[in-house]
Image (cartoon, rainbow, N blue to C red; front, side, top):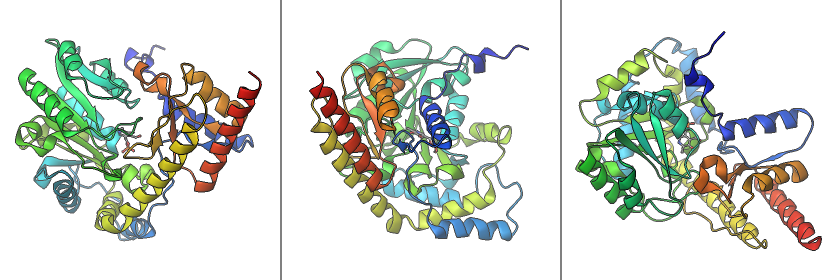
Length: 384
Ligand SMILES: Cc1ncc(COP(=O)(O)O)c(C=O)c1O
């Protein structure tokens, strides 16, 4: 039987595949230190869990509004106003099963067959495949250290419909500065392009200001904002995210929800409301924890000859430069050290020469992983 090229041509997710490999190795008895998955090791706060179980017991087990519960849309709009100053009516917000589905809903609504979408790299592994699922063509552009406007402008063709921006960036942890955001908004205005803005790590900013294209009227008129509860609250498995769209356009995005997943379960949405109400209490602690780990890991890695690592100012990843053979380095850490990571080249050619470590493990395991990596480097140095 034949399968559609839509799925057969799709590249597997390098991060999900690595997580599966780690799962299988653990099942076979190996004690792997997992630094590959973007799943923060935060236990969802018990009050959030209680909200879901209470909602279930109270009968929130049916279809709910496919747009999302009004109370949660209110809370998401209020959070967005505090975060970026962008003012959304709750009716311009769609509650989605995770940020990934918000991204897919955004692309489904703006990409037609053969349309091109510009994707700065290194970038998250799902951008290209989600564009392809919509029949579009991803146009990867190497931009490790900054958003290069000239390169973006040169890549625009009559088929270009959108630019994907992500800040803080997965995998580098870089936070896009205001001048880069403003330049992308101006470019998008000149060429009448959408900006799909993925801010799922924006709550984990350790210093500086978070800048977003939707913060200005010109930007918000052409920006689709992808957000998520996953990374902020340790809620990856709950599948809860949101998409904010310019005023008056939500209906088209809703139709995609109506004919696909229908709605996010009501009890999950009720839990999300409680999560947002606990934001000020919970999120600063999580940030502190991740920042301390990034500082530690970056210092330990940077001290290894041949490795360069600077602690990013956001998120929970570090992205050390390890020399040209990033895939071999990552494989060796897994095979010889039982330390799982993701080669930087999985995030596009511009990520080659780096390895992404997700500091989503206990502090003790992180120190142990750093000890193992350092010992291996010493052994390899001595045998050279
Ligand atoms: C950059 C980026 N965007 C979006 C997501 C989607 O996360 P979720 O679907 O769990 O909200 C991820 C998850 O790893 C990510 O790294």
